Image (cartoon, rainbow, N blue to C red):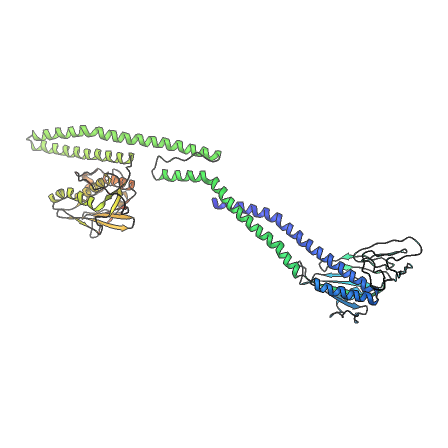
Length: 555
């Protein structure tokens, strides 16, 4: 769920970032292209004006300007005469004077702009501008040798300056920002040419072609071409897009980090509820969930806590009842057994004595059942803290207690395994004693006379010790092994007739409380193997020496 929230958050941020950044980058790219085209076109137009003057000083100025342009910018200048085949000294002839752009400029007076590609731009920008002869307008325009202004003797003067050319009618045409032609003192004009006609400019698609149509009195004396390399533009383009790409990655990374924090905060109440449900499912009825988060999760947490509280109260009441009932039944059962023993001692009739012995056996079985219920209720009601115990020493002490009972039937109890006296396990006080007593009691009951019970103590790993008890009894089927830990379940073997059905249930409860495991499997050569896995502790942990006691069994 956290992953989905983070992905959704990052996706929303990415969409918003793309919606803002991509249009801005396209706008900057378009602006860069437009500014470059306008600058190069202005320079080419200025050079065309100098070429149109036709005198030597203007040509020299044009040559110096072309050289400076090549040195200071990534562009080069090419010039062709009106016939398209001749050079215009001192400028060299272009390498390709017969291409379409020169043809349009020399024949039709069109200014062409070619970016070399339909996608952004190509390796170079090529602009070709026609050059018109100056001073041939039909309005009576004449040059002033002292330079500065062009006058017209009659009529109204109309002056208009543009990048592509200036249009003049019948009046005057004067330039303001043009280039002085040098020693002759003749004014070069503004960026336009007084040509006595009209000029129109059109921008064509993708080819970037500006079309100018000249009047009938205009005379084209040549054409100027500027080739401007776009490598610097490409670098600037990569900086524009690269910076925004890096910025976008950084923003998305920050968004992912913030999204992870927000997602964990939002899902924290749900994780707490899940932890509470997991603990509850494992049998911890005291598990509760903090009431935090939004209103919905707080309501759900309160509902689950209330249900868990009621269930815990009911189960606790049931355990208390079982413990109290078991404890209260022990006294009358003991008194009943004593009464039956007294009756058996005072009766000479064999039939009556037999009935009394059967009743006594049932009372004994009921006593064992009550004792088992009491042990199980206490084990479920309170879990004692595990303590480090010397496993092999404890096993040896319990075997000493059980060997006399085994010797009465000729059963041999053998202790084997590679675990030494240093192996220590974690177990609650008295829990492992009861586990061994129940397992040995069952093994002794099902073992045949002069049989063997093998107790194996081994090291199962760096954090586990294994205790196995193997008997030579009839064993259990797979179905019986699956149900053997159920309460009050009794198998078809010898223990099924006299047991209470609580012995293995008590074993599992006590071992599980100490963090261990218990399983059943077939013993090699027949019989049953009870495998108990216990947690071990390090060498520096405190250990407790077990104290011997009487055999205890839950049946």
